[in-house]
Image 1: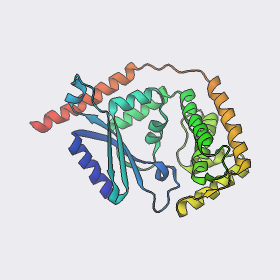
Image 2: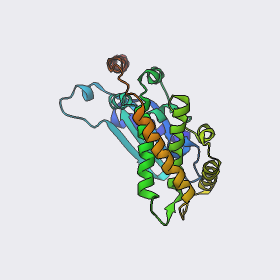
Image 3: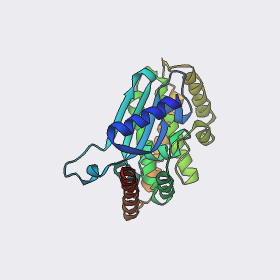
Image 4: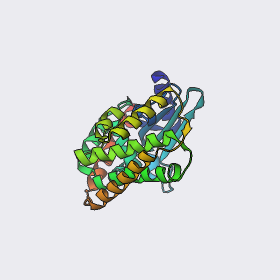
Length: 261
């Protein structure tokens, strides 16, 4: 499958006239609870050609591509868009940078990763995770007689990510083994492990809600909302990202110029 993914990435580059500088696996395969029939969620960051950045008209700054035959879903962001989200401590972007399954990397991304520590806004990152937990809980679990167990899995994962950040003061681990030690409640930990085991066997069914877990979720949502509110805001110097962006784009343009010689 990796060979097919790399081939598709090359086709995306050619069809869109871009340079992909980073590509990883996201979703359940990245988190560590994929089933045999789980699809592949490939996410990537790319640099566009000169006419994209110098155009007067607004251009689309993302690329989406689906290979249904091989269950491959591709979605990528232009480097400028990625840096703008990075400045806001975007949750998805930090997860991409920590993915254990990397299909393509580059010197630009290694420099990008080094910047992540100085630009991390823990307040914004915890807010992102706990807002996602609250949304999923309110929409799919709360006051329902029947729930999709898969939603519990996503909610517990994001809450444990907040617990990780509270204890470590850094971006959370991505995989379940990294997050599981932060499930201090044994009932919640066992519940999560049970759901993961079922998930790996195939798609999760619907079931009655677990009221004890619901109570645990509500308590933690309240706790981490309050924690995020109490944290100070971080104001980083965006000019550092401007310099990184300019140097990365110019390096790519020099590559193009050399290739045309």
